[in-house]
Amino acid sequence: MRFDRTASFETDWDRLKPEHRREFREVVRAKFIPACDAWATAQAAREHYVWPKSLRVSAIVNGRASWR
Image (cartoon, rainbow, N blue to C red; front, side, top):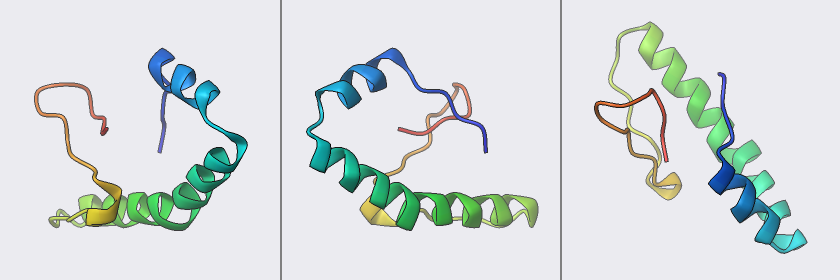
């Protein structure tokens, strides 16, 4: 999966405390990456995928293929 980091993300990242950066990385590795893999598998099989509620992922309609 390809991703871009926005300027606002970079600004937010720079403001995080080191322990919050570690927590973010842990969630990305433990939950977000596996969820992205599951989403890609569902898309390939043309199946519906429901993101884990804890990630609070919502598709942006009528825009780039991105999530927030």
